[in-house]
Length: 541
Ligand code: G6Q
Image (cartoon, rainbow, N blue to C red; front, side, top):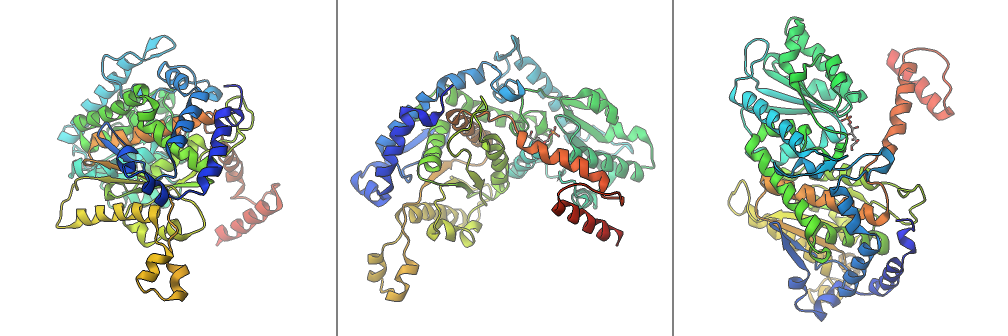
């Protein structure tokens, strides 16, 4: 798309419509349409989406769908599935959808079907996972694996941690899983302090196998292992496997080709939890459940690709999110899972959404001309209710919320689950409808407290209700947000698949690192110079 989306008639129509909608309250919209709750909901792929509590009417939806057309969304989706190099700044195809395509599917990059190699890796992962899980894979001293430590960062960490926590219920409880990402030595030290090296398997997960944090931690892990096992280098082959696209670097580290699980440059780091980067997930839940997760991803892929936009879960959620962001002035979006196992889901989504859509130029390098990705954040309910929900209810900022809940608990216990669900429904209700002064007076609230106890309401939310948290539904949820991010990026005309913004800090850190130990003169800005000088004094003790 050569023109900015903000220059289209569809955008201008939405801007004009927003002026009218700003003065309308959800109380009024619900009162005017008694069927609103049944109309503005969508059920697909086992997901029930209630989007009635957003500040939209039928006209808003029509205009948003026009905007998707004006942005050429359909063509963008087709281009992704066709393996076109839509990650233009890195000149790469974007084909995480191929990672969950069934055996026998045909998805091409440069004319070659990539699905067979995806399944070759999945089969190798499965064979390895079975050996570890059954106790057949033996460590250097002949003991089976009891501890699995994934070393990776960013996309090579956040997905694996989130998936492990989310699917813990389905995991082999005799295995212990740890995740090391931070270059802060505390992360590694605490992760291994109670582990026996003879029973420990390290997965070094790194697409490039050159990432400073991961390679530093991997070398520390190697040293820790060798120190515990008497220095025999042969131990490395039994205790280290790698997940990477970079065979030469893996070999240089000393990991045998047989112990490397590959993926491809058309898999972005933050879109890689269902590639070999998910090896720790497969070790935890086993190959069959991993495939169930992939099937869930794939179901949403097919839905995204084929469902009409007005009945397309990711498209609808993306457009409503964009409405809040670009036309109602919301700067953030909260994701609030009412499911304890999803406690790392907001952190995972932060990378997925903000690294993808935290851009200010379009693919062609021109300024976007409007706000792009909102700040995503969140915590599991009900904990958030006793902390930051105050701001969502009565603060000055508009914070659209996605509530995520399940019909059944994996740990049914007394009335807990009904109480949990009562809370999520009550929150959406309170945010939308608030509490009026008249209601407060009728309750006898003293006049001096009326202003404090008043809830304006009119605060938007989606509620996603699924049957139960299982591998398939986790795949569905992740794919839903992946395609939501894609849709918003396509409308803004940005490259959602590069991440140049994370590069500068890496380069500067490499420059500063060797300067910290010595006394040599330093030539940065005065603030950085003074910080380095002070640190030099501190590290001398
Ligand atoms: C994700 C980003 C980034 C990446 C990490 C780790 O989309 O590219 O978070 O995943 O920097 O990179 P490696 O896997 O190459 O170590």
